Image (cartoon, one colour):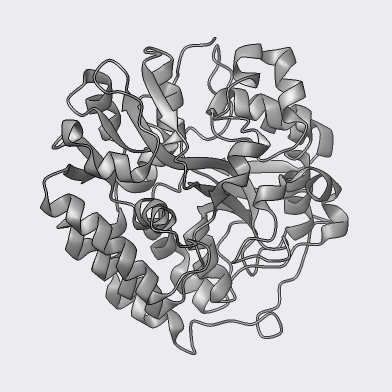
Length: 394
């Protein structure tokens, strides 16, 4: 198995700069999201597609989220192959370092129905949902996405914020569940065990990302994180508060928990699957667990913003990355859940160990226990984040 190539995971970048607390810090900005001036409609903000005459596109993505040639990091094998095959020149920019930060970069243009200079941008579910809610994202032509139609995993279809799979196409996905260090803790099977076992007291962390931690707590409380009420959220939050007040949970973190888990400074935590894969390269005692009550599934999604002038070119790129052979090459590098059916068989030709890794290619049993967090409106987003921050002491 190839050694890990990242010192900081993509998911860590997601929360490392501006996490959940930043959502509250930017409350003034968000308050404007629902104003008439920010909201756009398909009829009111039309985009002209110049793809037939301009064979180019601009692609904004997260750092270290594209395969590179390890001998020459200026080369991106799958992207270079797309350019050669399609004749479409791609300006690839790693300028998405945080969802809120990126929102700030493009907010004024999209609110005013102006071009952003981008044709594809990759954003996490909740930010994708917000932009879709604001009417800032173009609908894709399914006739131009046959690979997506054929190969998108069933668990990623018909999500709450994109019920027709026509606005946000997963680039990569991941899970939030439980991790523990087998050198220092016995097997943990449930969220309740994590939050109540006496031998774990003070040696547990949870994530500062509200949707991941609260999604797991909602499931553990018998509620559906894809469709819950305010009372159910409060019920799950009370469970979390008891664990905080008792001292069971030491703190809430971004992905810095991974170093502490590896050292044994903490022995169990709410964790992201991508981090556990990386830790597992060095220590097979670090285990990822799908809790008995279920696991949270998140994705980073390819979106085509309003006033992109190369939508058809973008659709060609999106469709290309849903070719199983291409998807396998990408997954072999980034090590997150591959959203493409058929890629696992192709991965066998590249790296059999990775092909057998359930955190890259989950089986149906694992995926059947996964949920995508409910799409929130502006009022809910502020209300739930505020309550969560009060409990975690941010």
